Image 1 (cartoon, rainbow, N blue to C red):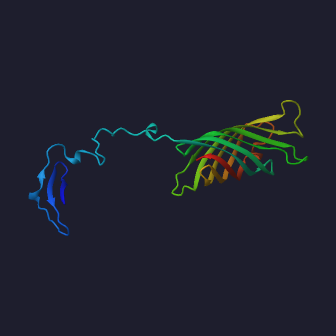
Image 2: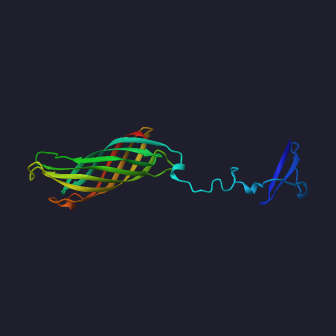
Length: 219
């Protein structure tokens, strides 16, 4: 077969024409290469683009846009007012580029028996970043919940205004496992910061928490 061989010397490109027979070996000498006219290959990128066409920095808007979303339920264990409590919650978010989640979440703990009169609930905005993983089935995410909440104790509070409004900030670390394209399970761990309480001790409601979640959506 007949072939053209290109030799790129940076500022100049050379071409040689060679005919190969089956099983034959051909050694080319410098005298067989002829300088190419026009723009040398070194002036172009590997994709054939001319320098200057793609020199501008890329931005978020230049990336291929994709999104999904999910909604799910959570169950967590924590200490509230020196008592062991389970806190139920729900989370719903839009998922941009399949990594950045922005949404809302809320949690609440109601009295578990007649002798337990304490209630605590909070809800607000959550931002969560999912770290890329070589395994698409298992991955981690780091999130933060900023919320408003209320603490009340029916044994001591009376009247229409019997709650204590508080501010809650909760950083979270979660591990996820995709069971299907639209179903995932996971575990959560974090720390709950509480501020702004007047009638309750804030340190009684601060502390670590751990639990699990189940979510449906398009991940």
